[in-house]
Amino acid sequence: MNQDTLKQLVAQGLAAMKAGGKVAAAATAEIQNDARHPDLKAALETGNQVSQQWTKRIDQALQEAGGSGEQKNPVMEGLYEVSRMIRQQAPDDTSRDLGIIANGQLALHYWIAAFGTMHAYAEKVGMTETAQSMKASLDEAKQGDEAHNKIAGQIMNA
Image 1: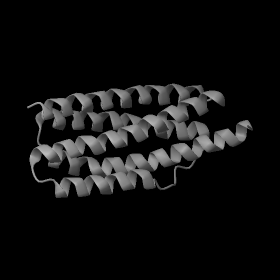
Image 2 (image 1 turned 180 degrees about the horizontal axis):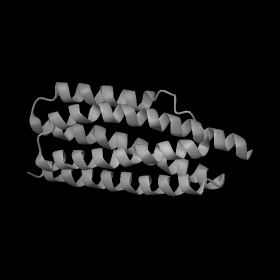
Image 3 (image 1 turned 135 degrees about the vertical axis):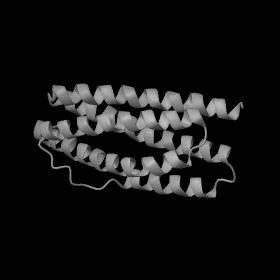
Image 4 (image 1 turned 120 degrees about the horizontal axis):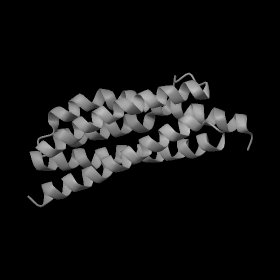
């Protein structure tokens, strides 16, 4: 594959990720207000702080790739809508918290796939800084997923 074509694909992927980050940021406060379990609330706050770092890394990577960042992210928009429905329809706090976790993990798996893909592609085209920052973000997303697993277990075993 032509290196320029792959670099353009990296820029497009990063632009979609930037748009996804905006959707996630808009959803965060709403979701944090709906969560009840203290460990879940803490994990959501930590996730919010980590995602702010992701936004900075994505912006820096877009600069390295020469991308504009103007794009929509229907995947994250859809996850946000599903999250809203789950939270509204939950019959109690426990099921709402578990729904928040389930949907949060779907979002985290999007980020795991996106960061992993961008890491590999950026590495291939010699975008060293982007590759490193995407790898760091990938590792953080995996840690967030594990934290959600543990909290779900605590809630279900309470």
